Amino acid sequence: MDEAVPALAVVDARFCAGDEAALAVAKTISMSGNDFTVTDAATGDVLLRVDGVLFSLRRRCLLADAHRRPVLTVQESALVMNKRWKVFRGDSTSRRDLLFTVVKPSVIPLRWSTKVNVFLASNDAEQAPDFRITGSYHDGACSVSLGESNTVIAKIDRRSTVVSTLLGKNAYSVTVNPGIDYAFVVALAVVLDEMHYQ
Image (cartoon, rainbow, N blue to C red; front, side, top):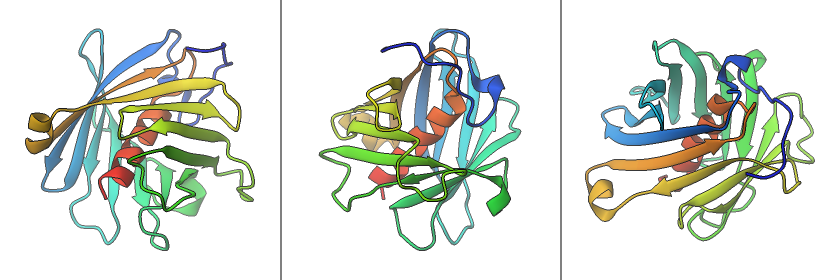
């Protein structure tokens, strides 16, 4: 990846690896929506799971650790369909547990060009993003950068075939720089997926 970035824990320091983290993300369609299993690409060990919530007025999913303890709740905003997603600590949707908001600033579909802004909860004004996702989701490659800079902290690559899509399965590879919170980056990958498959 690019230049070294100091350690950055958005969700929790326990999700910041000392070395570059290579993750495999497998998506399956279930009764509750989209489910994801996140594994260490080298060992195959399950690190995180994402389960859709079956009965909810808004699209929502729960990201849990390997022991199924809640880590994050990802929820679509009620006001702006598929344009704004809020991510909360644990299984909460309370304002006091808000960690960050993911915003698609344009109504242009993610198919051709991806530009998504991420605002930490402390950034109430949302004048400048704390993180930015750019690239082409349709072509299968996006980068997560610090603010408006070109400093890439993670890459999200989507790998799917016609057969895997028909079977309701997609695969992603996520590469996260050393010291960067991989639960945060996985949550961003889930939101991108939800925005794309509206």
